[in-house]
Length: 115
Length: 112
Image 1 (cartoon, chains in turn red, green):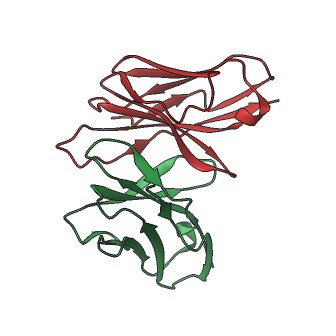
Image 2: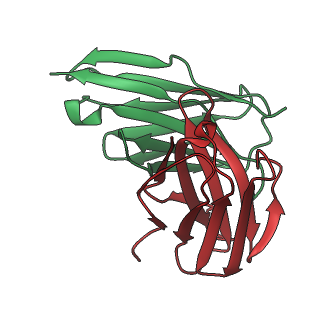
Image 3: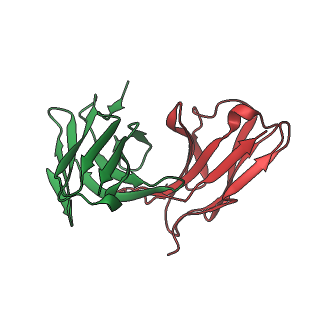
């Protein structure tokens, strides 16, 4: 398997623009997580899905953030409108369901810069 | 509140030295604990996963231990090399498939 795949790897945009980050989890993994990493706050969980259903979105900072998982092999994280304080590295991760070890696998991340 | 703490935040050692990285957690009812490595500008790479029923896991020069009663895990790196320089994070899960709580990491520098 190619691992968790994220795109784009880098995104530079201007304040007010819409940003869409994409993630393809490892095939067969039932859980998908979106994290945000900054120097100030470390790694923060934004939202996670189980079998394409959002389970916990309490980490989503504002209504400007939304996430979808239309099928088992694709998820998006959207920011609209974007602000400079959204600049961070956004990671997607996936893991198999219970009964396995529960090991978490991360993508390479999407580095977002909002000017 | 379930918290994970890693101390120190940064560590610098000469090449060849054996070293220990620490991870503490406030709630001992864990399901598993996972150690990751993160190189600058990269994602997190899984190093070792310890289930709650296990005491340690080994992979090459790495050995991770778990003591639930004291709320601690250690990552032992033997014969450190400059290539080991990275940030090491630990993550604790409290259910068999739910979210993990991450520490802030320890940034390791191994000097040639």
